[in-house]
Length: 637
Image 1 (cartoon, rainbow, N blue to C red):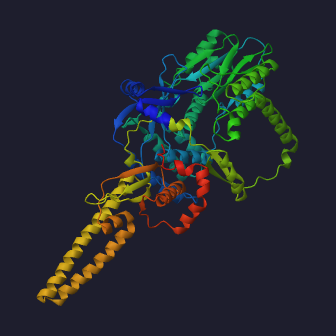
Image 2 (image 1 turned 135 degrees about the horizontal axis):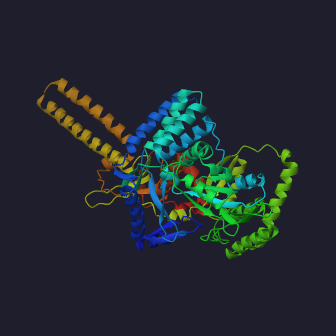
Image 3 (image 1 turned 90 degrees about the horizontal axis):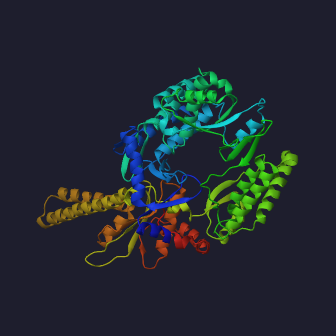
């Protein structure tokens, strides 16, 4: 919290760097200027963005229609609920590895309706459409395997990498829609489902908007950077270019391409031909689509970097590999003395050892990489011997899987639950949970992402959803310690208004009851019609029932009414949570328990079951041991 306060007090922005597992701190004004420069250049010169009114509520209604349509088509219902729709947020990653240190824009769709629709479209596409990209690889293992199975003729070969400049923003939406329509209808026999899938994808493409610094923009060109669906759609687009234009095109220089693989927007090629043929092919690439621009890099000293590999050819034209790290690489991993579970600390080293053993390295390169991993371990406070231990463990596991893999028992079905790791005492519940068939996945709340303040939404906290607290204002200078804790999946300000609305409704009915009492008194005093008196009595009974009903809907309104107190707007958002569910229920339960436990507070939550109170009491010691009770009231960002 001290770091967060320091950033706020000094008007600083902390964000991740684009490459190298590092962070960047810059002045807020400087960060905003970089982001605004990007938005202005792309709005005026390219026409990619325009300022619009926030369409989140309208978009949310369209999503509900799509959900309803899907549930009529499928036996497996799609549950969708977004009570507080909000736009995706734009933020930037600083390109430290570039001389001008520009911003790489990223759109965070987390917790938005846009994200949920994109994930559903991705799920259905992978399930319904048999799609295979012939020239694409998923990781470094893909290019290693393909190169091992490729025989190159003798003679001079040249390694070249080709990169698409800003692939996602460059994709032509009309062309993409035509490609998708042809692909989906040709692969799916159920045309009704095919049309629904297209509509779902089109919804993601057409509702392409985001917010930065309180202003909402519509992205008119290209795919959303940050959408779960964008990598797949970019793959479909690039695969179409390769099949239709590159390998079935008019370029005669394609014959000089002896090897071709692509990882998203980066392509690795091996040429056998003259420099002129290479140049002609690269020029040809930039003629196949006016929206897609290619840049290239040719090998230096017989070597070329691709992904995290340095690739070269030996005298027999066999591929040789080395581990490659960018100049912006930092050796930052979780330090030895950090408050994390030990397996989490080893995760980075396991990943490095896995790469060490999966890449076919020469003896010299292997030893150099082992030395590098040990240096990283030493710099972060670890005994370098852990690297040798991890290598032996990896080898032993490989041998066991090779000889006994078929004897592995069927894995026991476990439910996974995320559990906050606060210190070693958190591990004491691991075995207890395993006995219940629950495997805990520990995580920490003290992460860099908690300090990241690069999403400048300028949204009022009362516009968020989550756990809120309302306090009674007393009356005529008399203080009241009454406090109510609640939850809302909508804007918490809406729920605040509902409590006050119930209170005002009670007061109106109370006024009408007083009028009825006066009417009855007049009837008795002047001996007026018994019928008028009966009507007034019946109205009183109805109003009393209505007041009781309203009191049951808002314990806070009930307190204000019965105590004759007032509300002075003392309202806090205690925990910001995106949607209703188990997590919101648990935080509400904890905050109500803390409120009841505080002797200086009169908790007004009448519906708090005693069984839940006993449950919290039984867990109280553990909650203190784990630090949850002390930190629970801290605002979650």
